[in-house]
Every structure is written in C-alpha cells, then in structure tokens.
Length: 405
Image (cartoon, rainbow, N blue to C red):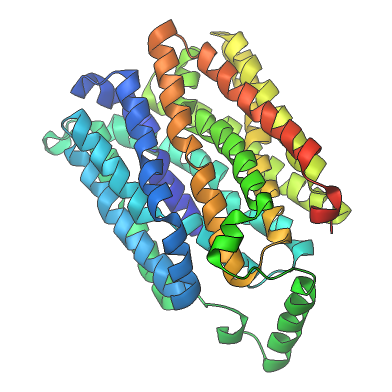
C-alpha cells in the first residue's frame, strides 16, 4: 500500500501541476489531457512482459526496479519545456511503472485465498484515495511555498520533491519484501505448510491454461478487459480532473484546493474497506462491484450539475469518490476467481494493460470536451455514462457461479 501511495502520487500529481504549468508553458487543456494519457500508452506496451518477468524473478527485485526507475523519470518532469517533451516523459513514465499494479495483484494471490482477497485488495488499493488525502494538501503546499525558490516554478518543485519517496521506498522493498510464503522468515515451517495447503485447495477448482495465447484468447479475459476499461475511465476521469473540478466549484488557491480534494478522497478510503469486507462476508462480487460503479456515475453526474455551488459540488464529488474508488478492488476479485499461477500473471497484466488504455482516453476526452464547451460538464457526463455501462455489463454477462465463491 505504501508503494502504491507513492506510485499514484507520481502518476497523478500532474493534475495539480496543471494549475500552474499550463499558464507557464502555454499548454491547452487538450495538450494536458493528451499528455496525461500518454502515460498509459507506455504502460500498455510493457505491462504483460513486465508481469511475466516479475513471476519469474520474484516480486522483491522487480518491484524495487520499477519504483527506483519511475522515481528518477518523475523527477525529470521539472525540465518540461514543450508539448513534445511532456508527451515523451509521460510515455517513459508509463514504461517505467508498467507491471507494478498487476504485479501486486498477482503477488497477493501468492498469499491470500479468494475468501480474503476482497479485503486485501481493498486495503492495498486504499492507496489511491490515501494518495489524494496526503498528496492534495502536500502538492498544494509545495506549489504555494516553493514557487520561485532557486528560480524554479512551484510545479517544478512538485515533480522533484514528490519523486524522491519512490526511490527511497524502492530500496526498502529490495531489502525487506518477501517473495512469497516459502521465503517469509517470520513464519514457522508449520504456518508455511498450512498457508500453502489452503492456497492449493482454493486453486484446485481452477482449470489450467495451456499457454499465454490460451489465456489471452479466453473470452472471460476479454470480458474483464471491457469491464475494467469502464472502471478506469471513471477512476482517471475523477482523479486527473479532481483539482480542476474543485476549482470550478468556487475554491481558489492551490493550498485550499489541495485541502478540499482530501474530503472526497477520505470518504473513498472508508468506502473501499466497507465494500471489500461486505463482499467477502457475503461471498458476493457482482452486485457489490456494479453497485459501486453506479454510485460513482451518479455522483459524477450530480457534481457536473452542481456547478459553482461549492457545498453541493463537494458533496457530489464525495459520493462519486465512494463509488469510483470502491469498484476497482471489487473488480479484481472477479478475474482472480478463475486465474492462477502463470496464467494469472499474463491474464491480470493483459486485463490491466488494456483496461488502462482508458487512462489515455479519459483525460484526453475530458480535456477535449472542456476546450470545446469551456466546461467540465460534458466530460463528466461522458465518463459517467461509460461507468454505468460497465455496471450493466457485469450484471448481464458475468455469471454469479464464476465469481461468487
């Protein structure tokens, strides 16, 4: 979770940098949206091979490599001068981080059986709202406090200072992370045997896939790609534009905007734990995932309608956050119900890489619609519609017998 807080902070701090960077560099919202999305093109390209390497060499070495690399790349954003340099660095950042998220989802399947996985994935993915709770005020404070020091703008200091934790935590991972149950020094031999037996029993029902091609050709994997695309569309439609939406609600000043963004993120963190525990306790995945997606869609639509009514807009963004942030960890209990081992490494990476193409589409579409209409309303409506469509796909096409164990 700590690793993902750092990862997400480096991934979306561009949303805060936008508040100053666009004016300083003369970028349009379309340029910003396209650049924000370029991250996911690099991410998509290297996701599957990166996750297969992690499965072969071990989580400790590969996750440490990922974190140290992306920390260095993230710091280089302070040298952006043109749209092309922005696009290239966002692409390279995506390449550097490729494999991290699906690698952790795969890593959790090495430790936890399916009846505990909803809670564990929710705890891990709490990093997304936590990065907003911590990163919003921190980003606002850095930009307000350091602007002009050493001849650097506030957004340049933002990229530099928020890159350092990735390198530090990467070294910690290399020193302390255990690759799996067998290598954990804090477990006794009897405990290791018990946990490994539980996992073997849990995975006994899963049909093995013969090859990487068989995994990618599985229609269930294709269905999961479609569903996750809609979830990511909503997730990044909200996170990349949250500072802008708060600003549009009548909040001014980078520090105040950062503090107000912490409210929706805080509610999202609490909701993730609630939904994850409820899904595990009831052994029910479909309605929990679809229901949270519909809550997110309603909240985003209402936030667009609220306009400059600050209290109502923040309340609606809070509702949106509870749904948007809760549906992603609930989703990941669906594909891990029928994938394991090497098949899980390839399948999870494929689902995540294809689904995360929405991370390119979402900010670009919202930015393009904002330039076209001079408002974020049309973009929020579009993202909400996609999110609602994904909920319907889950309820119609995902059989309960496949995922509700």
